[in-house]
Length: 413
Image 1 (cartoon, helix red, strand yellow):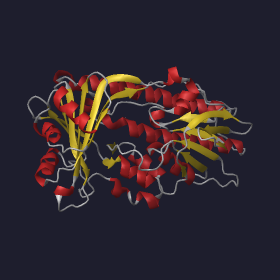
Image 2 (image 1 turned 90 degrees about the vertical axis):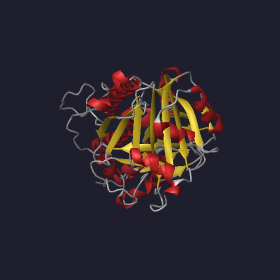
Image 3 (image 1 turned 90 degrees about the horizontal axis):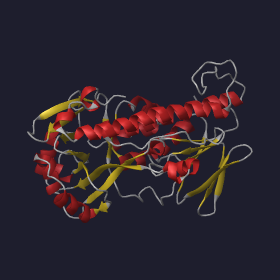
Image 4 (image 1 turned 45 degrees about the vertical axis):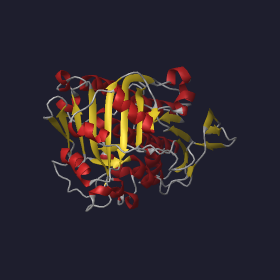
């Protein structure tokens, strides 16, 4: 329900990625004024593309997004022509040694989306200021001030750092050493391909109409559909492949990245390797080391500043948990801001947001309320980061794959 008070608190959101844009919509629907600042020059400035699975946080996502935007959600789906059912809403994983099906993880209600198309959808109706590279933040008498490299500044009641794994906000809150991400030792390669060949697309789709995995040979592979605009002509479809392995850190793009994968990594098998072999020149290919950061308490500037999404807990891609936790972060953040505004307007907060989780008859301060919120993000995020690293380790050996959470507990929380 939108706030009824005449004064609309202003939230500055740093980062126009999915987390920042989702937060903008949720806050706007609850009566807040939102300004999103982004260091990139436009929505299309970053050409890199990947897919994301929305699953256990889908009900929260649907609540945060306005109905008129949510109705176009199918535009972001990788394959919108499917009749979604229990078979489609599974993620199969094949044995990298025998080629047999290892397991199929049920992901009920899940949808795989294009990151770029979903971002474009969520950018609607949001005030985004581009070319705004954050330089500093400071407390004011009644709020928070952000200053930028171009000499501009702005003030708001709150500031949310949603600026990704290499978050500038996190660096300002903790210092560069404590805020620095750590290399995982696992390399991540992806290729976005348009083969112009319906048979090749069909070979990928045969593993699964959405996406499929391969594990157990010191590397992980994945293939799937990225876009399927013309249902009757699969030669026009775009597909993707992924490869993960242990290795020395490299950061490569384009043909150089593709050549590295072909000549310096152990081949996968079946269509998981064919997808790489078929990759045309000038395809979007990249290789880089996946990085993480285990969250620790940060300075919330008297309850005015916090972090969300990859800025708060960058993790490996295993079990598709990253975006689910980002969505949860946004939902919890909006809830605590609504409590803070209710408190400032004289309403009771029921005393439930205390730093140690105990009930109290006294009204907690803004800093205490936000610290309790931050502590929950930190605890939940640290657990997810650790789990993602353990999943990566177990995915490299056919004998330990069976012990993965993906196998024993699926893709749930």
